[in-house]
Length: 285
Ligand code: A3P
Image (tube, rainbow, N blue to C red; front, side, top):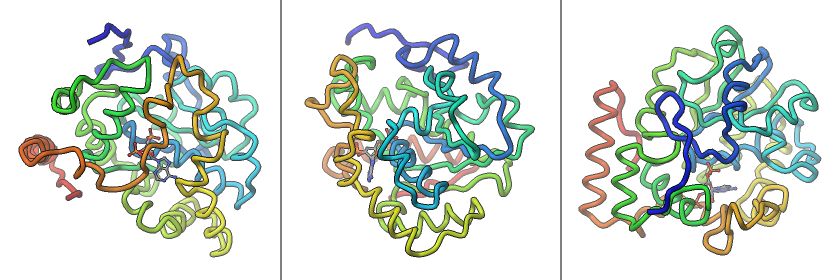
């Protein structure tokens, strides 16, 4: 296993690329506005997909943001270095993404009315997607074999820690109508319906035509062809899309092509036990 530098930040590991002492301090002291909208995800659950959808939802279907601005500046990560560079250019309502568990959100978030869209994905597919991501991202440790990687994933020795801790932190947060829970799977199944839920949640009342237009521009195929969203502008030194593209398969259930029955049983049992201990049930097959 290669020795890659990580930042350990109040528990979970974060890659040093993009996450510096300054950026984490900046996030901690970030002044959240009531009109801000955060998309929160455990990595590999559909973050960049939401960086495509949310700006279109907020702009009422105007394609300018996704055609003119790279995703990491369009909907910046709260915890990453880019936010400080672009924050002055962001207009309200500001859209941001974050991989933070609930307890790492800035204190101003807790006293604000800012909204959160939390996207959850079947952890078996998250593990598969993450396995390939660890192969292509030079700033992450080599994942080893898939079996070895599954152990690391279950132990939380991967970026942003344990999936169960992340999900429980947000599921148990008492945010009332400030939070919308979406699943990657429902987005795959019917993106229009998921966009309708977002529109209602954000009180935007988008027309069916606009919703369909947004859904068409946010398909896996459209995003793969969009240089502002497919990470082809990132140096191969950081992300080698020849090893595995960032937009890899974009389906639900690819875990069936990777897990054997023993791995599936072990994985599900650990995840189920941890969720049950937190008083939650496992919502995926
Ligand atoms: P796969 O590796 O399973 O293909 P994140 O942005 O949180 O890192 O998540 C990346 C995952 O979201 C990848 O999953 C990627 O292909 C998938 N994804 C991104 N855009 C998508 C889209 N438009 N439709 C379906 N899946 C998408």
